[in-house]
Image (cartoon, rainbow, N blue to C red):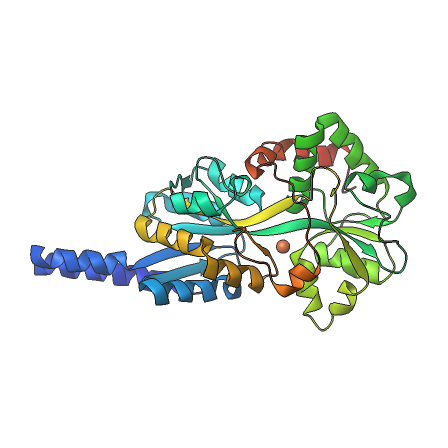
Length: 349
Ligand code: FE
């Protein structure tokens, strides 16, 4: 936990009680006191979001209390029910945003600002979640053992010539599930199954580890090709031990000649029972704005979701690319099938 939530909640209750005790003339003041905060549950690491929250507080005077929990946000909201102090949840990946929606712990937000700056493919059509940053699911290839144009699409990964040369994390991980769901959305279930089975046949080893571990395996010569989220290239480049992993690969933005590279998001949702709803929507709109977008995307080497905000210098150095514009809400519909498919082709076996 990043800050002590109990304390801030008690403080709020204290202000309300004071207003009630002092009588009606003070109620307005009391409501201002109550209205001056917003509570966030986040699975994003504090260092990524705290700077934007501080900027928001400086601009609006509204205090942001945040609780960090790597997992279990939805379960926590369900347990707390109507008593939950949380106004907003922050998490990564369409899978987790979609899970929160399906669990019934979010509510619709109708904001002209959000609808105008967050592209339609990166927000729920009913306003239950909005993307804040983008990540591309890129292919990286050994710069020693592969030519730059050997692979140009996700489909190429299933070609027999790459037998024993590909490394990925588990087919059940939410990043892989979203990618497979996007292939299903574009090519249909049968073609997607055939493709995933082909990729599985080409694996150099049983799926294991996180995205960075796949790049490490390329650096050590265990495999030649991996699928990872783009921001890990930035994170590894800035890490003393891992920079040599990053330096061992070239970046491929897949499917530039057709549908574009699969994109995912980090995002936010307004909770169903948000006690500080107006402040929460103000924070959502602030985070989609120019200042916060530039800060947020740079912190984690992600792309700003707001197309008016330029990416960081490092990301621009990777070059421009065509992104898949199929809405994530459509891709999310195929997640269950994608998860099942990983079992059907025994991807992790
Ligand atoms: Fe990640």
